[in-house]
Length: 112
Image 1 (cartoon, rainbow, N blue to C red):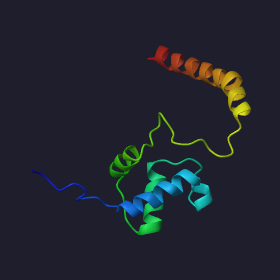
Image 2 (cartoon, helix red, strand yellow):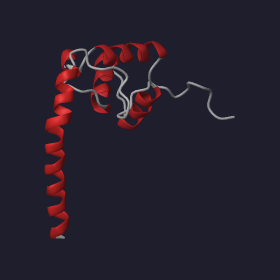
Image 3 (cartoon, rainbow, N blue to C red):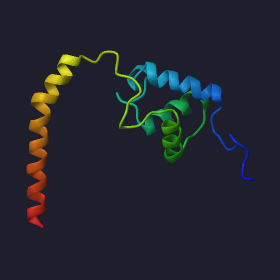
């Protein structure tokens, strides 16, 4: 019972493949979109630009999860990523940022 598999989909399998290729191979800025990292809103803009299909953000989240794109495990590293610089940032700059954020958070809580 229920709807047949695939009914109610906004994108065809071919369109899905095209979008997956675009978001895996390029960043939004390269495709003349405002941003450097893909998110639901930017992928929805790309779909509207390429296919004229307006995609709600909740539906966009469904598609991204289906395609294996989640905040916890990116599908692919950026092609310009420098491993040494990333590690240096994680070891030196991130802890300082994290510590400042914790201090600000503590101050806000103590003011309540």
